[in-house]
Image (cartoon, rainbow, N blue to C red):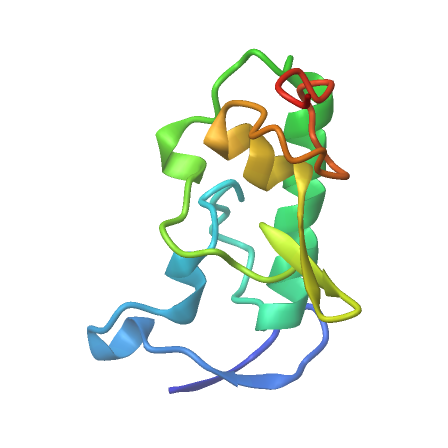
Length: 117
């Protein structure tokens, strides 16, 4: 079903009313549910989710685990990683979900590169 974004008025596909799972269910469930808030297109919802993720990361210590309801199964571009010159750059959110330093000196490591040799 076609819907209009409540933020930018762009048209986008939503499957929620056809009994299928909508594309937005793949994103971390970090947005509060509000009855007065309409659906958002992928671009606008990604911006809003990233704002909520930023708030979460800023307000919760690194040692705090990411709640399971915020974890998505698949990697999501612009949330878990972004592309830079054809390379994947993992975000702090991705590293916090993993829960430890992998030792690869990642740019956004929140663990002070504790396992880097």
